[in-house]
Length: 324
Ligand code: BT5
Image (tube, rainbow, N blue to C red; front, side, top):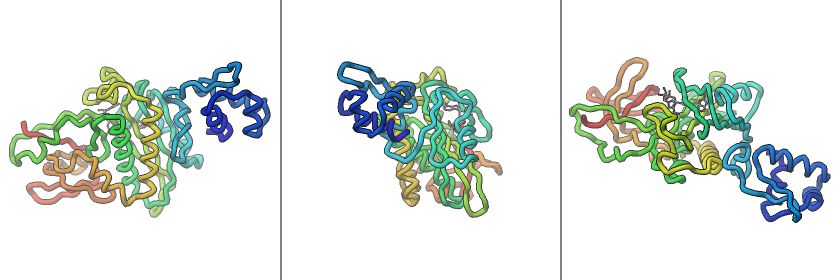
């Protein structure tokens, strides 16, 4: 957000102020104050003109206001509706952008992994972070894990019992933890997931250094389950509607903290994961792995104990299993 606009909001947060008072306090012209107030109104901020001066109303629940009060160094590019935030973020990355978050209320051409469709009705938090970390490409998956941890923490703060399914889905917990460590050999069926969030990371770079990384994070927040595909759920279904501005800010702040301390990402992921200790079936490009997931190793490798020994899975689609 433009610094003067932020200063206008900060000043009005303490109570109403007239145009001339604001102009004096911010050391800008009265005309500039008026222009900034108009721009803020267009962004959704309620600023009433009263006899005491400008009076700040409620901060909008979502929109460009996500940048106001955000304690992480991201600029927000907000859209009411867009095809795919990842596509727009890639465009910005190509133009040299850094630490910009493309955010939209509705996403009509969202992408999942392997070109799968991602459904993005109004009420979600559909976001893509444009990053330029100084890391080798092989470390980029850690950023995806960090995003999953950040989503889980923000969801838990909102009262939603969320957990991570390897590699980077966030699910609503349904007590399946009690069924972990199921007897080996028993007939097993997949646990029906209740997916709250998915993450799609894309990047460009040389052999030893990434040029940019786009971390696309989709969270079903204030959405009715009827608008989502089977196997999907939302924050609203779990705890009712929440303030998406605060949720998005917490998510971005948690992500920012983790990227600054990469050594904390794997331990945090382990703490928040439903997959560890769980019987799993993982479809990989080279075949199916069935066993008990026992650990995650850098930069996101799942360690599975199978009847044939320990298998390390680098990528794939994972299902949790439970006895039939
Ligand atoms: C993912 O793929 O889970 C990654 C999704 C990333 C979406 C974000 S939104 C912001 C950014 N911009 C984009 O264009 N994408 C990113 P995958 O693991 O392949 O899961 C895709 C599958 O999840 C689909 O095939 C559906 O079965 C299911 N699905 C689709 N929409 C969903 C939703 N809103 N909630 C839960 N599941 C969904």
